[in-house]
Length: 70
Image 1: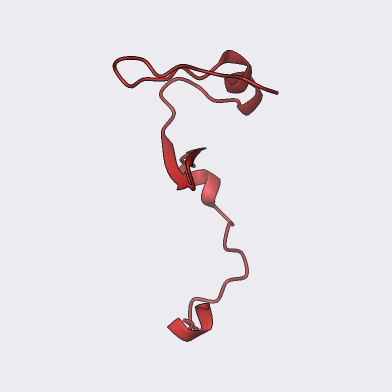
Image 2: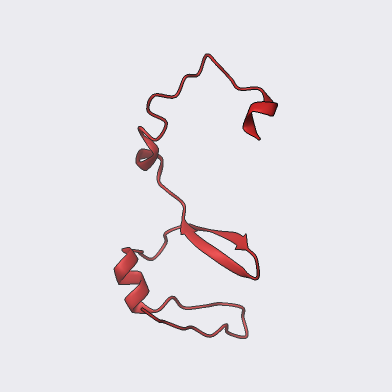
């Protein structure tokens, strides 16, 4: 799917209908912009109830040291 939009003089972009429908995005939904090289990744901010179970099996009693993250 290829869809384009034009940045308005007020720095606004309308998301094409085909994209909104495919992604099930609705008016009033909150989004985050994540820089990626010369572009931008647009992601919807999840609702709190959508995060339930995301860290299933994680242990809260064993925090990793900073060296372990690299």
